[in-house]
Amino acid sequence: MLHVTDARDETDRRVARGVARWNGTNGHGELAPPLVPYTRDLELANQLRTLMETDGHRTGSLRPVTVEGQPAFIYVCLSDQQHPFAQGVGPTPALAICDAFLLCCPDEP
Image (cartoon, rainbow, N blue to C red):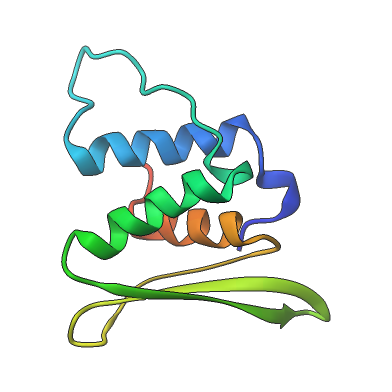
């Protein structure tokens, strides 16, 4: 689960690196991917959602939930056979989507 304190440049860099790997646009010797505020902008986070859902004909849903007595959001992305592909939780819709993306596209060592 991502938290409000995770809505910052460091998390956005992790997401940008994941997007670059997903798209195959960040090979050896290339510049770092541009910093995009995915964690702070729902429209940008929805680009991640589209990426996860379109590539592989998946479907996703985002809904409000309560986590430890606090309002939150959960994003679940399922394969076309309804198998879980990614799931994320966060205090905002953007953070829930980013959490799911980071879990299905983890940082490289």
